[in-house]
Length: 179
Image (tube, rainbow, N blue to C red):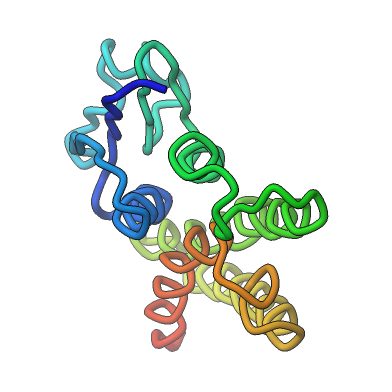
């Protein structure tokens, strides 16, 4: 385990926020390096070498690089607090957490991003309504998951909750808009 971790992030990025939140919850020292997405710093040559996808966050641990927030969350627990209840060793609990992480990454986050982009990019009212309906449907599915357990992936807080928290808070802000 390397002594120094570096996280390239953007404060407005929900996946970046999840990584920062976990580092604070587990008191993991991480050097934070802000990437200015508005100035397209993620497209610079040096950054593309870290992450060819040109996205945030990026975690560097010595010569090891991770470029996906949910993988970063799992890695931080596994390497800094192995067996922690946020990502336990039990295969079934871990599989339930992984399932919710995948739902977050494949359903929740993309729908929020679509709503945001349709508004920021000045898409048509029809397109904005469509993305809003899609987000609303995903939020209803999320509510169904939460009706079955106290937390997103069971009866205790896990990295799935930390991952989805910034997304849910952003969704609540978007759902206040009426199209």
